[in-house]
Image 1 (cartoon, one colour):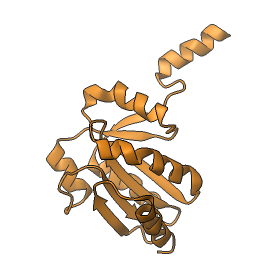
Image 2 (image 1 turned 45 degrees about the vertical axis):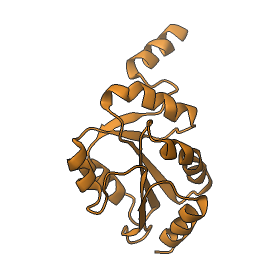
Image 3 (image 1 turned 30 degrees about the vertical axis):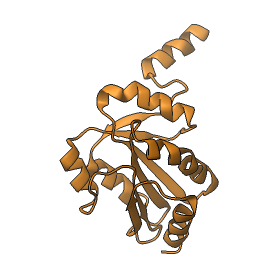
Image 4 (image 1 turned 90 degrees about the vertical axis):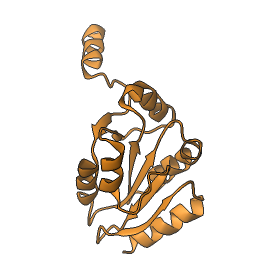
Length: 157
């Protein structure tokens, strides 16, 4: 029986690990739309090499665990050859939901996510629960208060 379980884990490559999927801006936008009317969506684009990204990451994970009506979508802007390092980081930070790693050229990904995004990281967008419209967005690390304020607005929009 143990050998069978081990075999299944090896086959799925994700036994005890977060699912990390390659993605494009278009796929992320479709995912965001799927939550309209059900949850506030917080999209956070980050990278391992980005110190402010790594610093704010645990706070976002905590918000995700605390607020039932919040769906956090993490997208790593790291290169695909860093797949294992990204997955390991997500595991260490307690991320248990599906996360993403960009699989698209930078310019196409950046403009596909939002026209005002310059490409700076971290980049965060909050989408309203009911309307699905953008409530707030920013580049750079922000305080927990900024996140909570935007989430509260998104919950009532």
